[in-house]
Amino acid sequence: MTLLQAIILGIIQGLTEFIPISSTAHLVFASRLIGLYNGVEATLKAEQTTATIAVIQLGTLLAVLIYFARDIVNITRAFVRDHLALLTGNNTVLAGGRAPARLSQEALLGWLVIIGSIPVAVVGLLFKKKIEGTFTKNLWIIATMMIVVAILLALAEWVGKRNRTLGELGVGDALAVGCAQVLALIPGSSRSGSTIMAGLFAGQTRETAARFSFLLSIPAIAASGVLELKEAMHKLPDVSYLPLIVATIVSGVVGYLSIWFLLRFLRTHSTGIFIVYRLILGAVIIFALLSGYISPQGG
Image (cartoon, rainbow, N blue to C red; front, side):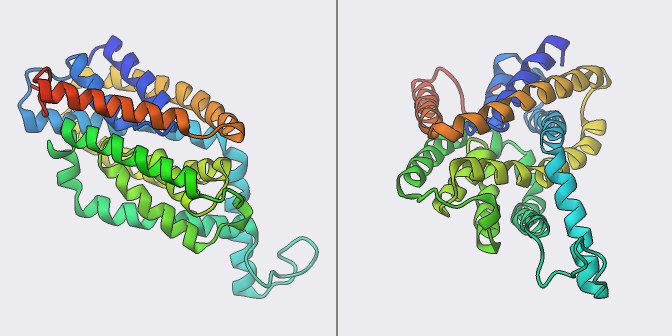
């Protein structure tokens, strides 16, 4: 991987990780266009591409950690404080001299992130080899999921009540959004697209769905990146290390700007523009496949 390829992949990762148009789909497609790891055997090429994408995602993990630093600190502090109060019965643990009758909103949100992360962790570990292999790089799969999730997102926009805020979320929301996050293991689905879709179906406001989606991304991206970092050390050429660092930094900067943009955009706009984009791109890929202009697995 050259520095130019790294910058291109970093920009694409940063732009598409949080916007509901599928970062993996764009990265897989872009890796073909720029000839990433050309000349490598198909299975190894797929594994190297997967490792590269997962490591670059660490840049967007840093972006979400920085953007939501205050929320993360508040959630962590409340989680520890409230559970200590419940376990010890210490009435002086909480400000005001009262132990909580139940967990605070911030502590509960911590549990919701944990619960919502379980489905993707279980499925991801069970199907790790399949996810890393050639199946999930197939453009038929990518194009199909681009269209399927676009339709589901449009349906969610249509039927969702969009009247529930972050403070009103419960275990049902965590399970619904967490299960939807499993779809992100299939390229073309989009982690943010799938989770925002589930949030809208659950009646969340667009901004709430996006914020919970971003918080839920932290364990998923961290686990994927750390696990694949070890794999990358063995599967990627030594000359890829510097470009990989550059790509990760670029994705972090662009990812931070993407979070800022999407949260403000969804306060006053629907996800319609992203739905249309997904439908068009999916249709274009299918047309190109049917015409023989591109092959499903590349080469």
